[in-house]
Figure: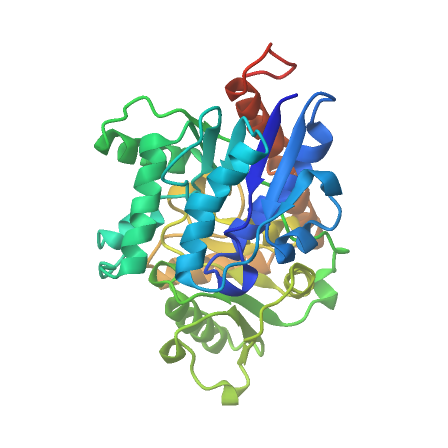
Length: 379
């Protein structure tokens, strides 16, 4: 019986800069289970909070609880020692790391698969997204990506843009035949009833981040400038993390700061009730927030470059990076969208990015790496 593993023990909602990676792992696990053949088994290795997020999507006998580490040393031990030991103990032929951090040793008989959403960690370490990150954490993340593209049995990624960037990194490591598959990904926010434009709150949403490439300060500054210039009595809701200097005083009533971590359900309702999402990241491997907002019937403004131009092709709201006036015109365009326009964009986005499609492509990779006769969908 082919046994495939998903390693989720290195994912913790309270200690990550990217909730999207966790949502990707959970969405993929949920979608993989119903696609398995009768002779296949998926084993999920995860900490208890992540297993709770799966909420019964994976049968109990197919889960392995990995203790949640409390310190950096125990996290490294869990990822690089306990993970391969678990693969050997549970006779896993394929072990998939959705976070992309692959152990430095591999037990015989197990092939590693890594999902690398982008090469952002490498770009930060090299100073290509602002000031170079010379600290131990930045270097570790850089080496984790380079190790994955240099040694992993198969790499999965979410866009053709990221595929090209990862192939360049692999070539640097002397690996010019990197086995990589573009799987895409689905939407993790739960569906909520569509809210008609006339019933929406007069507000924009920005998902803040302390990461420089997300450009939270730019998003806030441009949004507040737009509200002032248009004389629109609306507010900007900023969730997530944000550098304190980027957030002006909300006393004027045009800014609401949400500091608590929102659940997926809370984020879905917030987006569905808002006029638009403001997304200003200058580098992405996919661009999930505008995809998820559009899938809820809420248009987004987004920089029309790189992976975002690929993933959001045909959607209104694209603007020239670094150009406020292009941003303002894009926001004018999406605010003018009718209910019919928004619902059409919603349905198109839901059809374009599905977990079933991503899981089908992922399972085909598992099957190609596991020994045994070909199965339906092999390769």
